[in-house]
Length: 107
Image 1 (cartoon, rainbow, N blue to C red):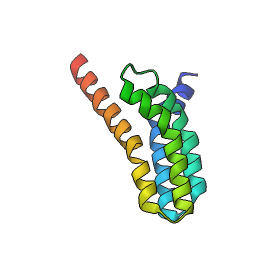
Image 2: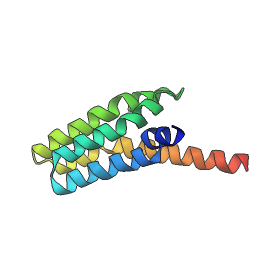
Image 3: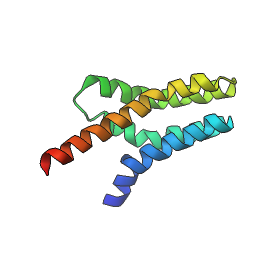
Image 4: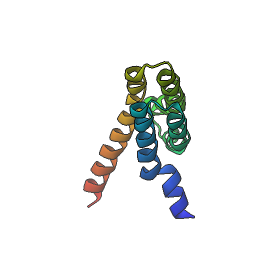
C-alpha cells in the first residue's frame, strides 16, 4: 500500500505528468496532456496539504493549467502550452529543493 501511495503522490507521478505533457506538446497530441493532467492530480492534492498559500493556489491551478495546455496544443499554440506548464515545473523544483535541504539538515 505504501508503494502505491508513493507512486500516486510522489516523484513517479510528478515526472510522469511532466513527461506526458511535454511529449504532448512536442508531438502536438492534446490527449497526452490530458493524461498528464490525470497523473498530476496526486501531486496537486499533496501540494494542497502544505501551509503556504502560494503552493495551495498552484495546487488548485495545476490540473486546469494542464487542460489549458491541451486546448492550446489543439489550437496550434505549443508555446502557450509550454508556458502553462511552468508552474508545475516550478512546484516540482521547489519540492526537490525543500526535500534536499531537509535531507541535508537531518543528516
